Image (cartoon, rainbow, N blue to C red):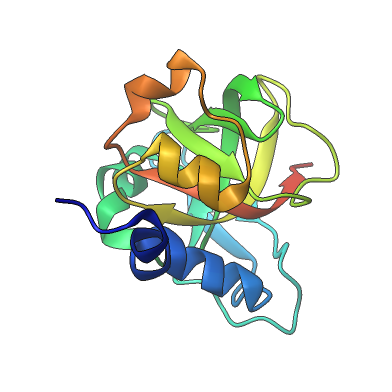
Length: 170
């Protein structure tokens, strides 16, 4: 038997994320990441502000990062990614901005995190927290967002990103 929803939300990974988000974010820095395919440096700007601590991971959303997404669970990261498909004003999928193609990763955006809605094909910098085990019902209730659409069923149980800040990449 599952724990009551309120207990799962506050005790689980999404609850921890919300506490971190409520504490006004923790980390950010700018970094250069070498693209192993193209051999070019990718600059990822600090979008959290200079008063925040350095993120554990700052770089492009690439195959290596996605492969180890579970390792980054509940840790704030800053990634540069390309919007693949917009599902709603607060949900979309992202892929690698450079190099090898990767499977899309679901992004759920907290209220007020983006100055405008991302469009497919655009590069964005995401200040986000990877979370394990997407559960549309828990995420919908916790973030006050409608995820009743059947499109979200394919993401059930997958790792996803909860973005607390977004900025279109230059």
